[in-house]
Amino acid sequence: MRHCHVLSVFTREGAGGNPLGVITDITGLDDGAMQAIAADLAFSETVFLDWTVPGVPRARIFTTVVEIPFAGHPLVGAAWALGAMGPGTTRRVACGIGEVPFRSEGDRVFIEVPLPGEVEPAPVPSVAGLPPAERAWLVRLPLRYLLLEAGSPEAVAGAKPDLAALAVAPWEGTLLFSRSGPAVKARFFCPALGVPDEDPATGSAAVALAAALACDGESAGAMTVNQGDEVGAPSRIEVVWGGGKVAVGGGVRRDEVRALEG
Image (cartoon, rainbow, N blue to C red):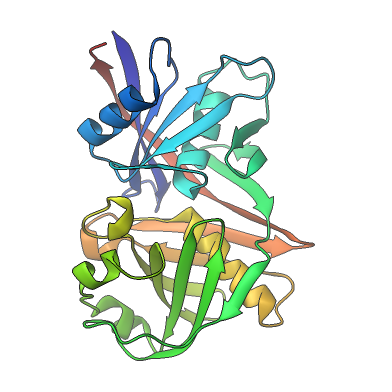
């Protein structure tokens, strides 16, 4: 018997957020068993905290179909668990891109990662259900995200993308957004990674957007990303970048603790 802490990450005024499973005991679990648990829980991601090697704990992040090296809401949730549930002796968590420092401000948790450097302008693809984009970028972090800037928040809200087409696109995730100053309206789709509909809140996509803006001349800045309204999970991601770093974070709420067999 082991326990899964179910969190909601990137909440908006205490509500909504992206559900996450956090498992702090991986005794007896191999890669296949972790993947099976993640598939059974059916969250967009589940994170397993690995303490088997002394030093900084490692976060292993699984979607329902694959392990991935980096994702925002699992790392924020893992950081919350490390800070709130103990032992409280670390302010770093390791993942596939290296060690990630984190900090807590009440129920809000922030992680900080290097600003991705692999950013390039991209031709706007023609995908059914996506509105015409004003600009597009391809960002590698290390998964490939296509970022599409739409003309208005209403265009973002009204999009009904062809998820079957996105599942076989030559990139893993698609961020559709509209920006007005520091306010961003966003939606994210990643069917190729086993998320069948759309993700309620995507910290890694916020990191990618900061990288694209930095590449476009905004070397430092801050923004608030609102996401998840279209799937009934209003979410908010706070983003600050500069000096080659980007911090993303937001509210975290623990919803329940589930007992898992095995």
